[in-house]
Image (cartoon, rainbow, N blue to C red; front, side):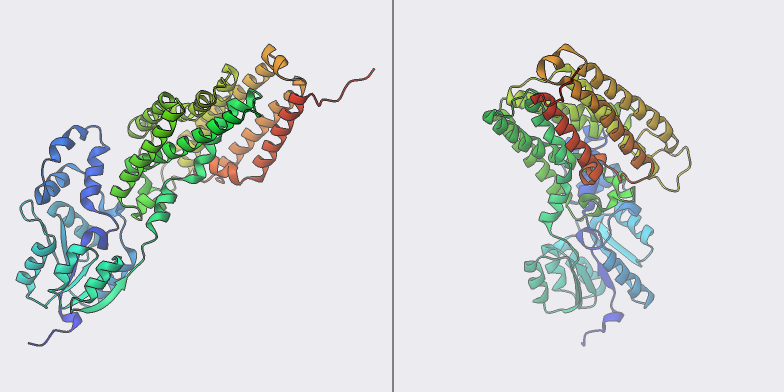
Length: 485
């Protein structure tokens, strides 16, 4: 018998890792693990395997097909084939509930062949099912993974999607016609690096503040300890950022810009993100233990995880926790270097970071485009109509930080620590101006999600930082002009 032409055979399309840039089983397990109402079901759930596990996960987890990361190039090709009259068949190891939901959403497929709770449709089982349904060499198959090689061997023609070099070579040696290849996946290392958010490591520079404020800039051992604490916080914070992205996956996919994050876009696999988070947090704990600063870092991680899984949903509580997490970096630097932080310093930075957190929330609420004034953003307890209230609270935090700074400058400790403490009074209007300007940028929608990233790229903020450093240096060394008369 001669082989049929390409258009006369049905095109059978794999789902996980092929049409989708993710795996539905892991998506479902993550949805269960990040829902405190379902979390207790997870240990017993994992005693199952294969098709039964997929079925139970699909019954418990709620996954919106519209939010899943699709392979857009392949999807466009499938739409073109469908318009040309070729029959499309979804052929997936995913459970029937999830597979049919996606098929209904896409409205592309003439038939769905999938796992059913008893039969796990992968590898040899999938190959046998397709041969039984269509006959050997009477179907085309689109796949991406090692277990798809067994299916490709039985196919008339094949389409290779984002396969590794080894799998791609095996696919080409199957004896089937290679119709097309889609390779649009980026470097995994690059995706890991982006998911770690190195642009936010600037927050961890706070570990150097206690040492500097204690006038111990010449303490070499303190610098070394602070540097290692900085590395520990960078690793730990990046691990918690990954956990936060995992817990906030659905919300990020709804967001205009966050949908491009490595996890939300499917560029970083869920399993890789979980493994990387564990390694980073363990690394941070190891360094902190060597510095005798493990308790403070443990508190930081515990607070970060409770924020990601629970407190993020509660308005005002969430911004207070964010301010507290930033202030913990000061305490970490204090413990690592042995230089204490004054209550004045903790209070000032507490109000400052509360203000920054309020800016972040206001920017997020303004980014909810097309929503009514009473719309509530997913995983946030705020309404878009709360922006004015957040601005008022931010103004109060700005005022409070300025008052704390002024009270410190006029205090006895400041007179004892600085030769020319009167120079420090210039800090009050300078810091107040800087915070007000950040609010103006936020309300003009120039902030783009995170004030820390904005500050790092803002030349005015760098100029303000230089002026602050110059004022502290002048006050410390007594460079104030002498009065005459």
